[in-house]
Length: 344
Image 1 (tube, one colour):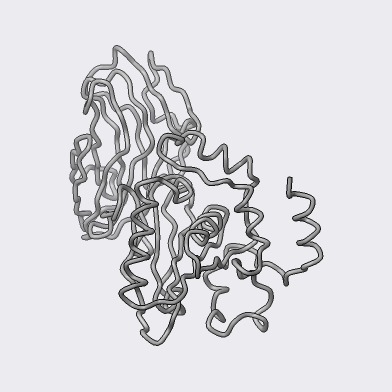
Image 2: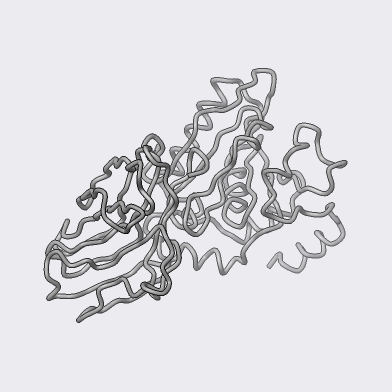
């Protein structure tokens, strides 16, 4: 675990042989969800297994779980819906250098249990076990340091206001860019270059573009309250990848005196629409065409060229954006031509 907001996820590995397939129907759905059905699976059957140590010869798997610190407490849990209800559980087993079990912990469905890693642990594994399950929809299992697993809104995390500076008029709202097996993160060495920074994170895949309705309202209210409390005159929304960039653009439209700091990494309008299609009932999607046009609006979006042309207060932004190519200097003629071609 590297930084405060990080939660590690393990998904279903279709290629692994450490899964119970006898008489089972396994379907991989959009978004990586797995629909699993077996009407005759005995209770106690290990349905699937994840390992922190690669064992390709025996199990055809690579390392699927993060390394844990010995003596540290971690939260384990799962995102799964079962029929009958609550008919699976997780079993965490800690193994020594001789491949013998040191201890184990049972985690019932819906529980978030703190587990201490034994001092002599060499590796560990997590098993999904049936307790009379016939059918389930599986999203993933998760591991997080004990004090870091709480979220402000269901599976969304909003930090406190960090590095407060009453002399600065701008608050920075930084959206983390989700990764495949973990929530995004912004290291402290980057955060310290911003004053009055709010970190926003999510444990959902693609973070639902940070547009889930209940979270959306909560974040807007949080920003308004902080702006009033600290007398901020401006709000800058920061993104550095395809997900965080579109979120920064979207939220910057909700306030009159705000702008977005983004890189050049965006998906197409159709790709964004497809990404949210599964979650239509939970997300109030924006008009992505308008947002993608907005990235060329220099009054609302700050785009970066080389260090010499950047505002002094953002001189260290390259650390935050080290996963994306920085935008070149704005070419107004090209932008105007692009907008004319795409205005219909």
